[in-house]
Every structure is written in structure tokens, then in C-alpha cells.
Length: 145
Image (cartoon, rainbow, N blue to C red):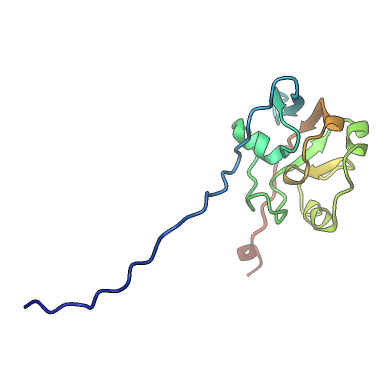
């Protein structure tokens, strides 16, 4: 007779779908909104996107150089963008305090700077053009020890 560990009751195992960073669904025909990213070297990329998509996810889904180190939780400034047109900037909701705090850490801050993770596309923003700054700054807790 073999002696071993007593059998434990079986527990079920379940998972939830992981959030896919940079994943966006293509817009439905006739509902396309357009956003243009201008890279550091001046190269422009125009994308058809859906209402509700944020700029960080759009950039990452299209392999643009936007880090988003905090995963889009408004806890860094690595998705900093510069809105090129003041009228478009004025159509956006005002940045909340958390975003303003992170923008204060952004390299090359301008009057029309925003965090890409906080800018969601709307019909009012159709045709938005944003410029990626020449550098980003990623301050981590280890930088302060």
C-alpha cells in the first residue's frame, strides 16, 4: 500500500482576458475618424480610428514610437503628445489634475501638450494632428533613491 499525500478537493481555475495594450478595433464603415501622428523626424502617419480610441493605443497598435510606460494609467509622461492646432486642443475636455501633474514632468512641454492615454477620439476631434516630442522622460521610483 502506497503512502502519499491526501487528495485535496479540486478547485476550478478561471482567468479573465488580459487587457491588450495597443489593441484597437477597426472603425465601422462610415464611422471613421482620422488622426495624424507626426514623428520626431517629421514623417506623418494618418490613421482611420473609432470613437473612444485613445492616442496611446492608436500609436502602439500602429507601431509608432510611444512608450506608455505606465500602461495608460496616467502615472507617467511617456505618451506625451503636442496638439498642433489650438482649435483642436480647445475641443478636448480640460486635463484633470492627475494628467496636469504628469505633464509637468514631460520633456518639451507646450501650451497644447496632452498625454496620449487621456485623449479619446470623438467626432469633434476628427482630423486631429499630434506631434510626438523629440524625447520623453520616464521618472521611476528608483530615480529618487
